[in-house]
Length: 413
View 1 (tube, rainbow, N blue to C red):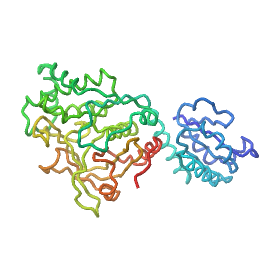
View 2 (view 1 turned 90 degrees about the vertical axis):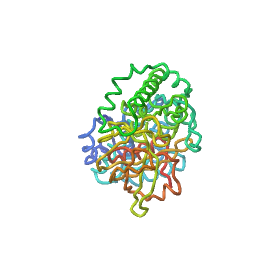
View 3 (view 1 turned 30 degrees about the horizontal axis):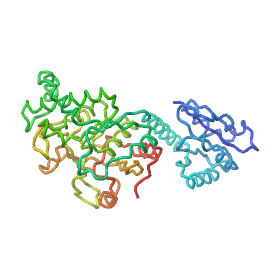
View 4 (view 1 turned 45 degrees about the horizontal axis):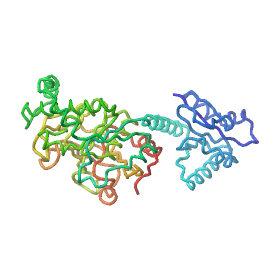
């Protein structure tokens, strides 16, 4: 992996002495990365160098120098300091000045292994953030009426994330659904049913209808060149007499983050998680707290990518008792719960968690995950960022936190 280190050192020190004085850390970095050292006078006035870019603080006395070049540094400034030559003290002063001037960043300091792991995390996060630029995100139909706190400001998302939000009429989905014949989806219907470990409520003809809707939504994704989308699925039920759960499940499986109910904030969280981890995500309702002291609660929803599960059952949709939904079943594992939200996606919550079991409460959505979170559950009851949250397999807390900070969000307090 390539790494650009913008290197600041006192005018009293030669360039050669910077490499000599900090040889232990710099040698370890160059063993792992293809490093390009850039000194302040070599910075381009108009653009940043390509690839992961961080600041190496080589000594004290560079505070004014960094301040003078701040507009040529990355939006999120990672200051690497090994503590030698007063580099840590200088870094702390720089960080303090940055915060006074609304610049995001942090100091990366500690044992060499800790610094190297931090560089990995920040390099991957920078790569994830850069991948978001230019993405087209569809909002198919208006957000559901009950989502009174889950929309975003389109202009802010263009400025902060570099994405384009595209409004698409729900009527286009209906027209595509009506134009798709049953015979066009027989093969994919068979595959979906045969790969499940069971079918509980819906007859085959209901699965066929759900697959016709999937074909329609997929056609819209292709037509508008969407990289992600959210669908007001509930408003489709009266006109199509089916549900969007399978369409969303399969498109998530195909690498297109697809969210429910027109929830813009949760969809963008799904997109950021996918860009950072490369993993599929599960959008779910926080449904029931089981044990406040042990941080145990159930998250549930009616759609999940089959490939994300260990096994799945074909079900009907919980709220409407119609259409087709997916009951995902998992073995115990580590997961991460995350949500970024606010009109400008300026706040986030992240917690590592342990999936203990999958429950089957008849009064909840079909896929039900009983989790034990690392973080106290007071967050959900006092300062939750909307309703839906996102769950991803594995422990990605550090990397996701880094990426969301680089996108300008701060942890909810």
